[in-house]
Structure formats: structure tokens, C-alpha cells
Amino acid sequence: MDILLVGPSKSGKTSIQRVVFKKLSPHESFFLPPTMSVETLTVENNPNVQFTIKDFPGNKEFDAEADRAILEQTGAIIYVFDAQIGDIEESCGKLKDIIAEASKVNEKIYYEVFVHKVDSDLYQNDDQKMEVYNDFQREIRNELKEADINVNITFYLTSIYDHTIFDALSKIVQKLFPFVEHLIEMLNSLHTSCGVEKAFIFDIISKIFIATDSSPVDITHYEICSELIDVLIDMSCIYGKDNLKFDEESSTTIKLKKGDNADDEAGNTYLYLKEVDEYLVLVCLIGEEEFQKKHLINYNINLLKQSLKEIFAKK
Amino acid sequence: MATQDSEKVQKVLLMGRAGSGKTSMRSIIFANYLARDTYRFTFTVDINRSRVRFLGNLVLSLWDCGGQGLFMEQYFQSQKDQIFKNVEVLIYVFEVVSKEPDKDLEYYKNCLAALEDLSQGAKIFCMIHKMDLIADSMRDKVFEQKQQEIIDVSKDFDVTCFRTSIWDETLYKAWSDIVNILLPNVQDLKSSLKDFCDANSADDVVLFEKYTFLVIANHDNIGHKDDHRFEKISNIIKQFKLSCIKTNFQFESMTFKNSYFTAFVEEFTSSTYIMVISSDPDVETEAISFNIKASRDYFENLVTDSLGSS
Image 1: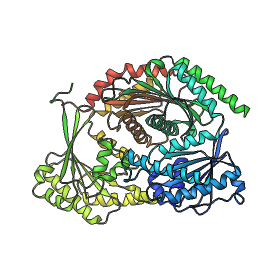
Image 2: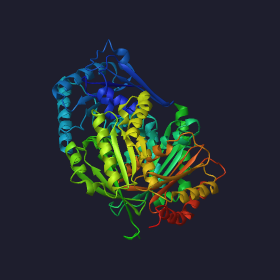
Image 3: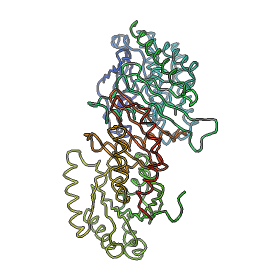
């Protein structure tokens, strides 16, 4: 499955790819040279969660005939729009052209729009972000209506300086794998049967989550879980044998007590991390009371782990 | 509870030319700033005095002295007595890539001269800062050279030089070494950590200060290959601690495991965290956890004693 990154030059496509998949510090992405030819990067940490990101040079245009081979393999097209300087009308026109050509070849492609770089001084509050988000959405819907093209587009507000970019890419990757639905079901039952507040399954290398239960995602929960993975990997690099970062026995338990100015509702919480498959971990937030029944949680996580193996085996 | 009498106030001067990074490093170590947030600081006007409490009873009175030329002149004239009296520690920050290296040394010499008059016996530390601006392969050479220049002008003073950067663990290393010198009785603490380490057949035991996560003392039973590991861990855990604060939580304990090791990081005495690393498969993790709890009171007293009797 391929994910294509397209959009005007200097909109931040390569930065996204480097920051998320190559761990480049966002501040250094400032100096990246323009992309001259297609850059391909395959994520294959787990044999069952593999996808390829294709980073195209700016303003790449597609042609149903010439690019047939590429489009047939494509699962999602991400259009990156620079919210700082981008021209909405022009961008929407280009995106419409891409959609028109691509949908001739492959009807199953998901279209995703990143309203990107909303971290600048222009967007100090959420209202301003929503405004550009809505403008873009309205404009592209009009364009598509006029051209009589009927596809689904999802919009995201993103920035490489915070976790929004990871969140958006996670949601896109999840669309590409049908087994994610089963994972969500399993996480839901973990949620109901063991009182797990929130559960994520992460690819630990890219820190993209490939599934979470159906309760709404609080971005701070995602943040803390993703930081936890960093700490585990760093500690394992220092104390693991032969710099072994991660293995079947990898696990972490963190006890968090509520801060001084937290509301009274919040009690102590545990962060619990367990390996579930090659380079995949389950990270849960669990209330103190529920965590007393750790054996029950472990038992259920083991069941989840086995089911996951069965799902992967059937594929 | 700490009373006024048992408090020990030590005056620490933080000096260096304008823009050398004094306020940035102070904020990262003592005020929970992230390195990337420090670029917003403008220059310090005159002197910024702050008190930091360290290990409960040790109070550092930090004098962050703005490095603009104009202020510098005043320091050595009208304000000389006020600034250079009763100084325990001088930390002088040199920017490794400096436009006027001669002037840096000039000011530094003035500081030493003032200390010679007013605070004999002050401890001198020099930080050769912003090492990240030097290419990796050149760092050793550049550092040696700078260090020699500094030692040459320091004459009778005994100086310790550190190479630092706010972007990696070197900053923690330098500050850990400095605070260690301010703890006269840290030896007892070290030998007790050794006993604790042996009793648990652990590999590594480290005591971190609660707020700064600077290393106070440690014992290493197996001779770990990486000498900078504690500073790295200080850095890693402090980052995590800051993200916890954002979500309105504080972490109390952490356990990390893989098939080779188990690491505990736990709130220990009222002013420290302890880290215990074990790789012995015969040792139950619960046992270590229990031992940590059991020895808490004993170490509480030791930590207080490490500050020296008042």
C-alpha cells in the first residue's frame, strides 16, 4: 500500500516525512533542500504493518494514463497545503485535477488534506485555525461539485512541532489496514472488561498508533504514551544487552499521581506498556483501582496478543 | 521541617559575556525549561538573583549577572563589594565560538582578581559552552585549546573546565559535578548506596535530586561501559517529567523491563529519586521494590547529613 505526499513546493511534504519517519528534529527541517525526484520510504518494522510513503516534488500533476502504475498501488493521497502562504483557490484547483485523474484509475483511494503549518504566529488561537480549515473545506467541496466528482475527503490541522502530525498520519495508516477494525473491537472489550481508560497499539519505531479503542482520543494521552515509548527505548539502549532496544519481555509500568492543581475527580493512574507483536506495543492508561487486578489485565492482554497472531496468520 | 538555622545558603555567581548562555542553562537545570524554549530569552538586565533549594536544606543563591559590557564595567567598580563578597562558587561561561576571545579572558581575569580580594577560597568552574556549534571531530581539540588558555590566565586559582551544550547531556554532567562539590559529606551516602546495591545484587544504583534530576551519588557494581549514562538518564527522565506536568500528573515510580534488565526509578526520600538497575534473573522485582521502601527513612537522614553539619 502506498501513501502519496503531494502539494505545492515548500508546503512541507519532505519535512513531514523526515520528522515522523526519520526522527529529524522539527527545527532542523528548516534547511531541507527541495525534493527533485520521487523519494520512496518503506515502513516495515512489523511484517504485517507495511506501507510506503512516496514524497513527490512540488506541484506534481497526475495523468490517468502516464501514472496508472503508481495510482493502482495507491491507498491514500495526502495533499499538503501550507496554511501560512498558500493560495486556497489555486491549491483547490490543483487538488481537484489530481482527484479527477486518480479516481479514473483507482476508486478506492482515500483523499486526505493537511492544512499544514498552523503553528506560525498567524494562528495563535483555535478560531483562526478553524477559519482556514473551513475555507479550504468549502472551496474544495464547491470545486468538486462543479466538476461532478464524488469522493470522500478528510481534513486535518497539522504541524510538525507538536503531535498533530502523528495523530493525522496514524488515522490515515489505520484506514489502509482492514484488520484494524478487529483490533479496535479487542481494545474496546479491554476497555469494558478490565476498566482500561484508554488503550493504544503503537508501532514503536515511527510512534504511529495503528489502533485505539473507540472512546475519543485526548491528544495529551497520546503525547504521554508516545513519550513513554521514548523513555523505554532510551533506557533499553543504555542497559539492554548489545543495545537491544526491544524484545518480547519489554514492558513498562509508570505510576502517576495527580498534580497539585488537578481537579479532584482525577485519581492516581498507571501507564502500562506491553509488547504484543514485533515492534508493536500496547499502551494503556489504567485507574489505580483497576490496576490492582493486574493479573486479569495481563491475562486479557495475552489473549489479545494471541488473537493478533491469528489475525496476522490468516492474512 | 527545615528551620531557618539548618539552612545553608551558598552564593553562586554565574558570569560570562552577553549571549553566552547563562540564563538558558540556569533555566533548564533549575526552572524546568526545555532547551528549545530558551531561544526566546533576551539579555539579562543587571543581575537576576534567584534562590534555588537543593536537596531540601541547601539553598543556592544564584546571581545571574547580565553580560553586557556596560554592566560588566559596573560590576568591577561601584558594585564590586556587593557582588564579589562571600562567594562560594564562581561559574564563568565562555562561548566556544566567540567574536572577541581576548575580551572574554580579560573579564574573566577581572573576576578572579576581585575574588582574590574579597572571597578567597571560592571555587571556580569554567564552562566552555555551545559546543554543539563545533563539528564533532573538532570538539576535543577545540576544548583542550580553550581549557589551556583558561588555565594559563588563572594562575594560582584551581579551575575546573567543562564542555557543555544545552542540547545534550553534557550540561547535566557539569552541574552534577558542581553540586557534588557543595556536598561535603557525600561520602557516607556513597558507601551506603554501595551496601544497598550489594544487598539487592543490583548492577547500578543512582540517587537523583528531586527537582533538577542532577546526580548526587551512585554506585556501580559491574562497571558499565557508558560513563555518561546518568546524565543521559537525567535528561531523558526530566523530559518525561515535564510532559507529565503538561497532563497534570506527576510520576511517582517507573519500572522498565526487557529480557535482560529491570530498571526502577522511584520517589525516594523527600528530596530525591532513586534508580536501581538489576539484571539478575533470580532477584524478584518485588523484593527490590520492598527494599527501596524499607531503606527510605535511613537514607532520609543520610541525605540531610550529606549537606554537612550546620
